[in-house]
Amino acid sequence: MGKKIQIEVAFAAPDKQSILKVSVVEGVSVFDGAVQSGIDKLYPEIDFDSADMGIFGKTVKKPKDQALREGDRVEIYRPLLIDPKQARLNRAVKK
Picture 1 (cartoon, one colour):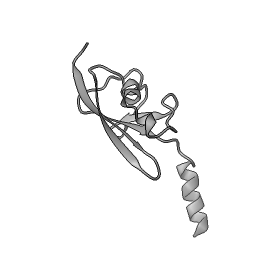
Picture 2 (cartoon, rainbow, N blue to C red):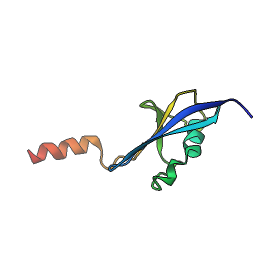
Picture 3 (cartoon, rainbow, N blue to C red):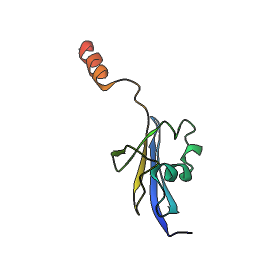
Picture 4 (cartoon, rainbow, N blue to C red):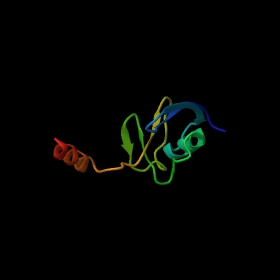
């Protein structure tokens, strides 16, 4: 068994946010770190296979391939409900 490192896993729903501190084996992937955190118990709507993930606000293109380092914060992103360009257009029309 390898050395343990400390990471955080974060998720924000519209009504609440959580950051969980997790101890994982060094070299674990971003995806596996998120799964091992158990954050899906707090937020059953999380689908790890389709969710975008990042580390400290930078999207990770291949979360199953990128290894975590000590102190990383994995962020799980919710899908957009509306395209940002369309949202701006809708606000402009209301004015």
